[in-house]
Image (cartoon, rainbow, N blue to C red; front, side):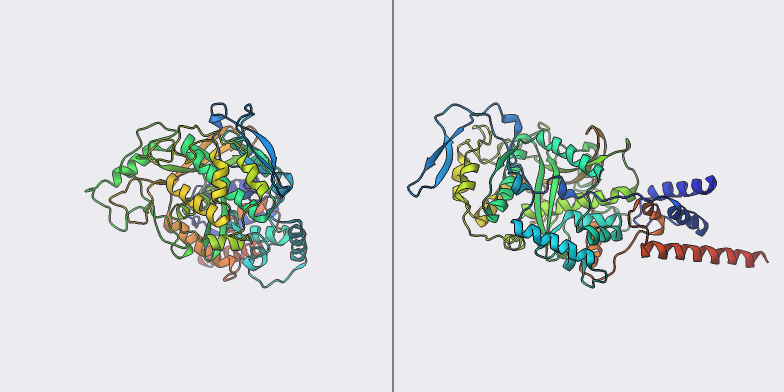
Length: 551
């Protein structure tokens, strides 16, 4: 390609990348032709959208504060045999102290899949069938996200923001997004960050109910760790969007505000008596948080009337506010600034906030979650599972109480409580109820006079994307933005229409044709070919019009 043409295309890519609109910018037909020619002439490179849930294929960590590892009393265990000959491993409170255990994870066999071996073979069979299917009229939801396949994830809703067709082709060919070396490096960075907060201890699970109970138990401990230390990582969340169970894993929750100046400006804007802008000029309300009909209940969050003046890690309950951070790894040394690159991350963080918000309000139907994962809500957990969980010391200091007014408020007052707690909540229904009570404790905030009854001011609308080097994990920079209810609702409505088969998958618009250069499916992509033809036709008509006007 001539250097001048390449320069024009690069200039266009820069212009489009910096545009804040979801729809790109207006460009002339000659430039469109140049861009499309460049897109056709460049070699193709495989690219895959990172699967958010694949950093940790199964939630493996019971969230416990690592900072207490050396301070509280820890326990060894002893083996007992009951009258029926069943062996139990229980705490030995009289013996010497052992190395503290701070996190629970699945053993190697259980970490690989949340289903018995038969389900693994079944999934492989379905994957082979999908590859053989050339003309499948079923919706993407029916093909890829109905039982026995896994439920929908935040990844499934977010990834098409880059290119729907690319994600559809990935699911059709591989059954999932194919992991790349860059994604593996990113997973390693996430694992290191998680280990800064938690330590893993393998646990054997016997039944499907045990497996799912461990996921709930992990969330409970994650919320307690947040309250005890001011931070937790890899917190799993669930919700329901248009009848579909959706699962996600939040990289980080903390009490540290990512942008105090922006928060102060928001608080100033909300002060009583301030003149409001006209409706046309008014900025989107950052406190609108629900997806309307897409989630089971409506609600929105507001900022508190005062900023936290306490310690940055663990503020008092009177000013406690939780901030959501997503961590992205990059091979390049620059932080993305273009809207088209940041768009999936924005959507992802807003979805996390909404799912977290719904759990804090107890509006997620547990029966639907259990049914989707094919677990029985009232089956007791196995003795093996209870004994192993109960043998661990969760390293919360004995001074911590149940009082939500305490700045350190995990509800385990002593290290000996865990086995009694599990015995008292030894079914999925009762353990889910315990988890919901932990959400209520964690996201409790004083009433805001300007809030509606369903609002939760403890979850901040300030959302942060933190960018780290994939090789070293070093922080390169971050982007902070506000939750935008209307934008999220528009996106989810449109995306779910594709998942349900109400419309065909779409490729990228002309302004984002540069994505085709790094797409493994560009060769033979009908959308791309159609856009090339449209661009060439418009350019030809434009040139013919110029010729007639000159005559």
